[in-house]
Image 1 (tube, rainbow, N blue to C red):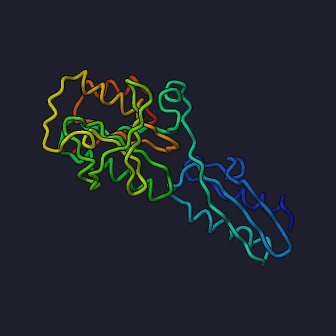
Image 2 (cartoon, one colour):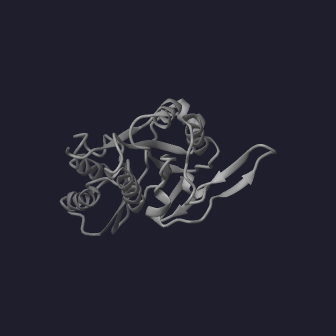
Image 3 (cartoon, rainbow, N blue to C red):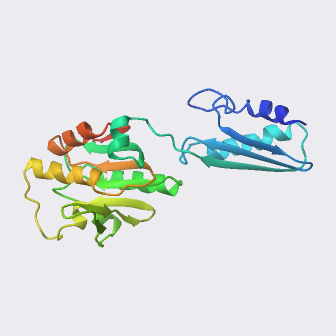
Length: 242
């Protein structure tokens, strides 16, 4: 059995969404064959790949069909692709993808979806950031049980770096970390928009695969500021059947 035969066997494994084999897609990163051992590395585009385990099982089965009876070690890794955009790379150089979670009104579970989406991606192995952009009613601190304040570092007399709070493997920032929980947020639109801009420019976001934005309900200054400041990779709109 040769390396070329192994690679040919792996072409029988198809990506269910792209309908192409994993070899032509460039997923197969390593094939090392010794006398009684075979090491294969398959690198996926996201740790949340839906058929990760099935693909690993199929790879072993296809190699066994070639008559190899030695030890087969198939390693499944992931490298999250960045949606290249010059504007986002200038403002958020450490962030690969940005996803907004929005709703037409409050009380539909928007923040619940945002938190669980971030937690699920983190659990699958992705590096996740979560921004609570709902400055009028921040709920992320309560939902995740976070009460600590973020660390800061002075750059000069007027500017600070802010380091996001991290819990459950999620880097997060919320206006709720910076003000007293009993203090009402009576801000005009420009003040709220300015706070969101600071979350983008003054917070140190490093090595983040997915940044989730929990937006305020409805449409307004905060939503417009976000989409005009950084291009989004995608958005989730939460609705109820009414």
